[in-house]
Length: 317
Length: 317
Image 1: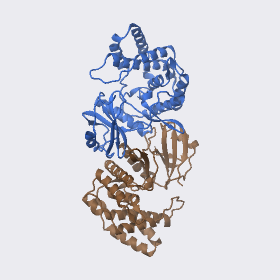
Image 2: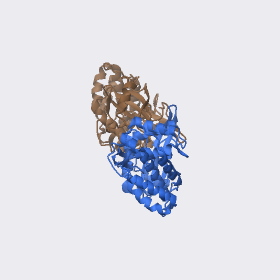
Image 3: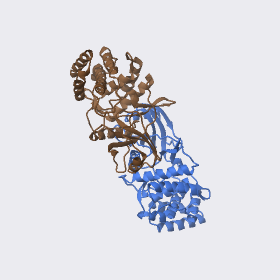
Image 4: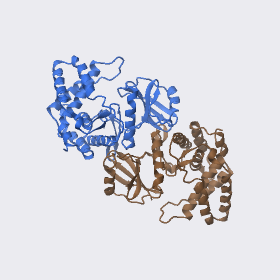
């Protein structure tokens, strides 16, 4: 469930008068998403999504909203924040920070083909190209500092074999310096459930990339690694055809440099570690009143083990 | 026809490298529109429309492009100009000023119902509300100065009865001062062929309002009058149900003031006169090499005669 704060038409109708998008026709809670309350809002002038932020500090929100606006302005299918009549994206509803964004078309595909993966690779490269000119900078909220802190907090809850794995991987990652790789604004959470697909007579099209609330400034290759780990995985490793399709399509638009080719294995491992740690923290360290859906950390522990054993080739260099 | 300047994939592919929208999949000329060359452009990342400006001076284009961007940012379904990787909307292709905009869904409806007219009234009011905060200002290119100049140029070509009508109407309009009415950015050409419709289970929705290249700063009521004259007309006057639906929906979002109620008849006449004059000019004064589709001026001469005889009520005041 992801409606933590209820919103009724009675409170929404006067709130919408701040905007130029017409009169409310339909309001409906959205039952997916893990950290915000989301609603479909349809007015006489269009279809929008209303998000109330439940646990992201207000001060951090302009970075995400302006990033989405920046990418939309560059022609990418991302939710575009809607400005109210004062020109502001961020408002307040039910005492929560709130934003309206454009509603995109499509549905998620959890069993992507190489063709889907090629589109995702092209999209990610497009996001990175357009993001290069984004003027704001905010660190990756799940970056190095978070990794060390979270590892220390979840370590006591892990069985011995996992502690050995964690310590060894942390040691390895501490010896790896990503700061010399190309950096920029990254999505950092481009999982299959964050991409909406529309079927057309020219094949599958991405109708929208959603959920930018883990975005930040970091190595572009980390974003590629997060994406490959989710889109190209099999139960016992990576699907070579999907990996090749995704990376080749990305490389065509933003060619990988030699330093990235050399760092690829470490990045796949770092991306796996990041999600192993966040899921372990959600499981072992639930915050009071937190409503996050707990996903199984073992999945990403196993992905980490697999990536330590094998790394697919990265084009370029 | 509206492809005056041919564009091939050979020239478009390298041009698109300035953008972050992926690789070209499809390029197709669009056979509607009267003053620009338009193409559907589909890339791996989305669907766009490419416009090459054939006769609008380059210096005037930023006003239109930033207006569209402003309205899109406020949540209205208008073509959003796409920024290239340098952040610029306006480029050059085949030696013409050129822009990519988002491609909107829907098809025009030339036989609108009162329900369609209500949606159009709401949309126009939304455009005016959002446009109030638009910082740039450029005069209506078909405003008072243009009217006098064009009337003087076409007058010699008109039969005696039309000259009498024209002189009388110009006299009347000179005695009418619209400058005290609410002003702002107006579309000024919101005809049926400039609105794209999508059918939904909540009735007809406007997928897009297009062709902002007659926009300018002028009385908002002039925009309402242009719209009513086209959307609500019958062969011998106005359809009361469509007029009521359009005006009531507009009034609900941006209430008309008393001065507008008093000026309504004059505005309907002014709007009819504007299109009578432009069509007469296209017919009698074709410019060398100009490729404009000539529409029959008699239609708007007759609308002018009808509006002089009868004016429907405007709500509010």
